[in-house]
Length: 239
Image (cartoon, rainbow, N blue to C red):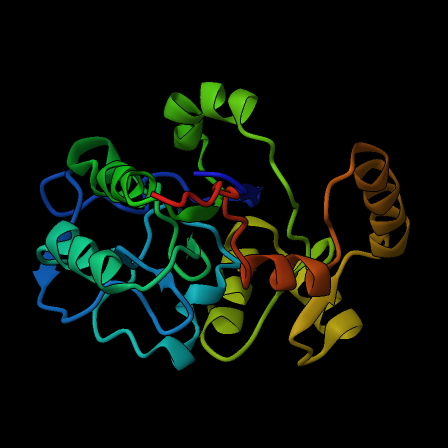
């Protein structure tokens, strides 16, 4: 599984946002025909329990028809994923985590993400993971040492807000940080990208450090890399 990269985001989270009526995790299963999108991305879970108040996945454009903390799990995800991988004519990069985090609390119990990644490795595909959870470290530390991480995907230092998650974010600011919502509204208005005032300086530091280590960091170059897959050259044989 060559050519992987990881993106870890840190956000303010609410405690215990995922507890159900009996104090446990709330989930349900749904039937799906595919796991991989046409762009070779997979969302194993729909919804999240990290409780980040600025989460973009709460936006209405994702059309979730269930409570965000009621996690929808794709029935027979492993079988569907394996069938799709087998049908692919050549290896490519498989991504996960762009919408819903693959390392939510339920992953401790279900291990679906772990098994999906094992299938990706088994069939010789590349892997790109985006997560804000330290759960990834439980099985990835040695892998990161052995693999040469190729890229860091950074859209900027800040966050995004749009219809759906903006209203939720402002409610949480009023609850936890009274008065801060007005400052956000004054600075960003209805903007989608809400970059930190230090974004320019931080991006300069990030680019300099990545360049020194030979790591891709620009979004254009990273997405071009995700669209390719480095295959090991094989020696031709006459027999």
